[in-house]
Length: 174
Image (tube, rainbow, N blue to C red):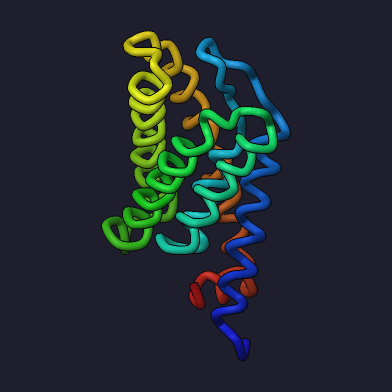
């Protein structure tokens, strides 16, 4: 590939779109006005495949766009930060801290740690910024369930995609 920068930008935009669509496709309303979705699987997938920089951008922007397009603008700034942090932590753990470990262990540990950040981040944002206070704790079980589903989706998709020589080569360029 001659222009690696363009390649990275295009893949980041593609994954942001995938995160947005996955987030918007299945939405289950939560008690505090947000919603549960399957986008976290693609958030983690983008972290694992694109790495800490581009995966973080794709996860944050794609998730924020889903909130804006779905009529949840109050959540958009928090979602940008929370999903970006989720992907950043998961990518760093997957690529660096757990390097050399088995792929399933890397995905599980990195994904679970990232999703715990997601659940705690939304609790903080919903409680402090949106003004729900401790009532925001009502979202924690749903966010943990959403996170668990995301880890399962990523655990299924990551090895399947990395089984392709083309995908592995793409990941090496990121």
